[in-house]
Amino acid sequence: MNARPVIELRGIVTRFGASVVHDGLDLSVQRGEVVALVGGSGSGKTTLLRHIIGLTRPAAGEVSVFGAPLFSGSVREQRTRRRRFGVLFQHGALFSAMNVAENIGFPLRELRLATEAEIANLVALKLAMVELAPSTALLMPAELSGGMVKRVALARALALEPELLLLDEPTAGLDPDRSMAFVELVLSLQRQLGLTVVLVTHDVDTLAALATKIAILSDRRIVSCVSLEETMELDHPFVESFFRKPFGLRAGVRSGGAR
Amino acid sequence: MRSPEIATDPATPPGARSVVRLQGDWTLRALANRLRSFREQLAGRRDDVAWSLNGISRLDSFGAALMWHAWGKRWPESIEIPDDLRAVIGRVAASAESPLPGVPRFNVVDAVIVLGSMLLSFRDHALDFTRLLGQLCLDLAYLLRHPAEWPLREISANVYKAGFKAMPVAALVGFLIGVVMSYLSALQLRAFGADIFIVNILGLGIIRELGPVLVSVLVAGRSGSAMTAQLGVMRVTEEIDALSAMGISRTIRLVLPKVIALTLAMPLLVLWTSSVALLGGMLSAWLQLDLGMAFFIERLPQVVPLANVVIGFAKGAVFGLMIALVACHFGLRVSPNTESLSANTTASVVSSITVVILIDAVFAIATRSIGVPR
Image (cartoon, rainbow over the protein chains, first blue to last red):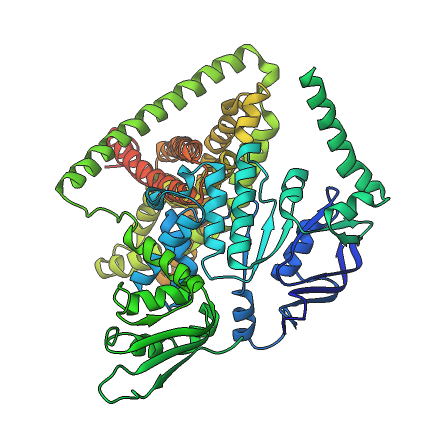
């Protein structure tokens, strides 16, 4: 079972009306990998992530997670499969009617397995894992800053001990310091818990720090899925504009500042 | 995935501790099916046996929390455990040491605080409402000086949405209420042989009182809530801020058209609903009391002075004005979260219906000597 990829996408076709977003797309993610999905705006990165979560279904092709098609088996099996991955939505998607502790404890409470004492204990643990003070537990989502919302959402995604973590724009809307701190947090959790991570991002710093592999979504397919060093070698217009230009710009700014 | 097991070795020398070995994956997913029996087997014999955790292949924080709580938050006296697992359980133990702050209990002081903040928030509402009203008056004055800037398209769109589209449901409700009123009164009137007075009862009751109030309740539920929700969502998505940033007045663009449109549309809706209600009453009277429709129509203007129609119209306009004002007031108070949106929408509908009934009482007292034949 370990040899089989955690996520396997085969021949994915997605259409929105007349426009084809994905056309025969293939991707596989092995256990323990951190794969960053990159691509231009409107190239269907988030749609692909939603296919993996099972929020949308492709027009053709198959999404397999943990070695079985996402929608196979009984309702119970599908639900169990879904609980094996945690999702961090772009804007956190915290339930605004509940405070932080209730948000994190919610999936556990819904499972009806753990006792209240265990839940309180686990919530405290997850809060400590995402490096938030215990006093934040009673705050409401509306009272949190952007970075804290992401951390609480991450803690909630980790509540059910997932093996696979899906992150949609994990650092969007955070300033560079905070986004670096968040990236380090995700990285340390990934090492600590042995997670497989798939993330969608626009931020070169984020993916350089996090990703072991970079999947480039372009021309309705995954054109390459290799490490950052190998990606930089590629001769592809997207690599040119996405990786080299910003680096070049930044280098220019830095040298300009040094002078 | 290896399923979790609890194996007990018999005590080799009698009297010594027997060894309990935990094996397999102690993860949330693996444990889910047999959780209760595991909890029982772990609890109650913490210090009686020797624990061996060497056979555990995976342990997540859920499994660790399960053990720690079953052991009563203390390490057993005799335990054999690899260092990495000890660290996992140790983390859980550490967070159990520093529990989260609990929600404090509600006491007398809190009750006083709640009462006080309710009074203060009522004051806030009153001030905000006055401010909105004042702003609208200023806007009207501004628009009178700059007639080219009247938001006519918005007004007409709102008349269509809140007025025209409400006509079918208003007609249905009005018709049924007319039938019911006529039917009930007919039963009583016939007992006294006063059949003919059904025209007075229906005419005065519907035109003066029931029509306007009925339409107000309908419109408050239908259009008032929609206005609050629309403004609220626009606040959540920062659209209102975007308007302000473009130098467009949010009151002229969003609030004023709704208020004017509802003030104009409500009297017409009242007229429409009252007519349909009278039609229902007339039909019912014809069937129930054998009172001819022509007679009903002929008698109506004789027993119901025209002043009542004017009062109904005036009520409609004032109610419409108040519903729109209350709806916009609450819509602009929404803060960016779902809870606030639903709370404000509910408050908007409840308040506007309450306000309408209050004003109706004021109308009843102020117009008690007008239009009622003695």
